[in-house]
Amino acid sequence: MKKEWFVLQALTGQEQKARDSILKRRVVEEMEPYVDEVVIPTEKVTEVKKGVKRTINRKFFPGYLLAHLALYQEDGKLNEKVWYFIRETPGIIGFIGGNERPVPLSDDEVATIFHQAEDRQTKPKPKVQFEKGETVKITDGPFMNFTGTIDEVDPERGRLKISVAIFGRSAPVELEYWQVERA
Image 1: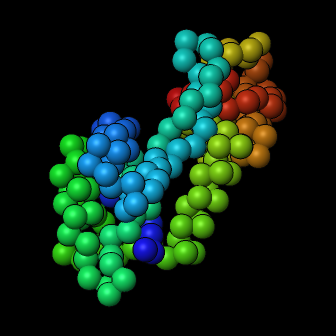
Image 2: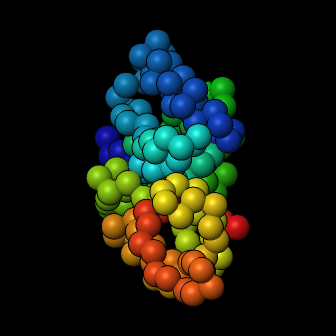
Image 3: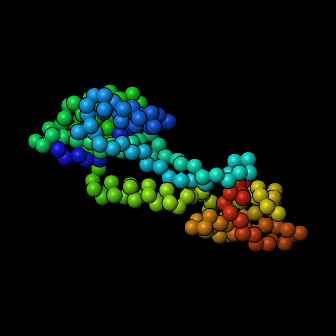
């Protein structure tokens, strides 16, 4: 029995409930041979709230799950039992890639998604992305409440070089992403 990866659309914000429901129901309804894994791709993101820097997990495909299923029989026909099992799961809207005959992800697509997920788990990225030339307000440090213009963005280190006007002159200041906000 060949299992392939499929994309399932879930109600936004209900991905975890839908995943848990599939995993729980597969045992009760004896679907373990057909339903293997159900994954919600996430990434680590750093954010600052009320002056506290924290790292959180965020879905990078909100509203979607990846499921490793034996949806097709050896003869290529749709396995109705698996089809209805997934479609009748609370929180699941349906399959992506054709409602009558869902198209599995290619091996390359699966590898890319899991590689992205792994990279995004090991290297937390800032929740907010900045661009050169953007005006920002400094929210932490000795230049707090000053505004400046971004001269350089270093996404690898999560740092910015900002030109700040001090005493009528422009001075370069290097700060971390979490120390600024959009002006």
